[in-house]
Length: 557
Image 1 (cartoon, helix red, strand yellow):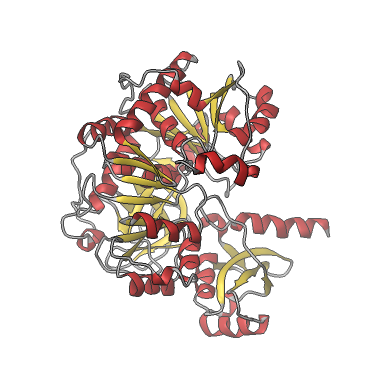
Image 2 (spheres, rainbow, N blue to C red):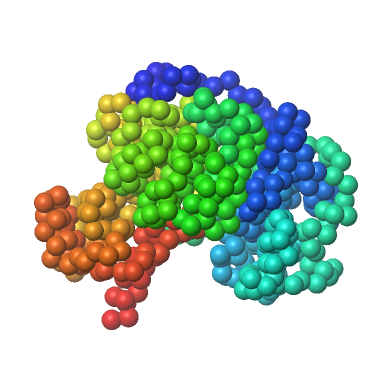
């Protein structure tokens, strides 16, 4: 790769080009088991599972899947939160050369039926709580067996014994039948001796569905080469992280690309400990920081804002923390500053998408922090800003355009959707649909989604810019702007605002503030104060959902 503007901003020791180890993430787990057999792989609410124990469980479930007729290339859906069974299932599926299909356990029956059908999944691994939901739609799908997981199976004593009594809403007793198998019973009846690893570098290893925030959800095919390359790019970004010595808080769900790569695959490749967090909340993170002294704390902006609002958080010992990692949405400058002042640790913001495995750019480790940016492209990743109209003219630093990406982490394509694939993959470049710009140091700023752009009276308005201005208001916790139909201007700007606890704010105050910080045509014409904003499973604000609500109101009228 030719010298790029961002290479000069890399941390010392981070190479612009990598010599890839053609090891799949599944094979890398076996290597970690060999090198660190007794090291903690998973910490689930105090229950430790070592690498040796994890490997035996993976082998046992791989045998169980094989006994149920799963072969290389078959699809197995995994619909679980961050519990040990999710990790075990994913790596067992990898190990037999099958494809893991990641499903969100919060999805409705309609959403699950769509993904199970579209992916051609034959088996689903899910929570006991969700078994009735799956059974309702099973006849509409190709699902042959349901593997049910008790959320309490791997809890330590006495939490496991008390769980049915103190968490009644989350407990469901399931009887094993020919159709429904119990996960723990399956693996306890199988030997944990080694299974030949059938994962292949160029073959599809995972099918992850786009969030659906831009329309019909599409299955993204990620090969083992994509997954392995992206992990190695991420490893290279943190040269002082020691193999077998780090501990990560698993705030990102592993059914999402961020958790799948940056928590699960990254950690198991490096023999790190994953502290599993089924429900990422500030109180749970505070308890983890107190008890387990993790070295790396990933999260979405709402986690960090919530932590800083907790007096207990400010009393903690942060000596173990080497850094923070944030994705899914922009992080306010004052949040970054407050975390640094309180803990002394740096914040890395990340940009990517499912189609990119997902990591594209990250704040340089130990480098200059530029709030509002998402850092620089990781090694072996070429990024261009091209004109929105033709997608062919490369824009200079400081100019805005569509972000296009090329690298070993770019997806194989959308499953069974060649026309959709052709729209975004052109000559090896992935056309992201995101609008952004580079500065002179090669730091990337995301301006907006091309599809989210508001056109009001002939002016192009980027909602993310407006959101960021509103984020900076001292009384505003969260904000999201959208374009709503306007007979005169085509569209006009509406802002949804969540006020910080204990504060009061009027519409007039917001308008006065915006007039000081935005051109007249960008100022929201409508403002609605709300208690909360709709979010995805990883805390990303669902702008499309707000827009759809407003459009439906217009239609009803």
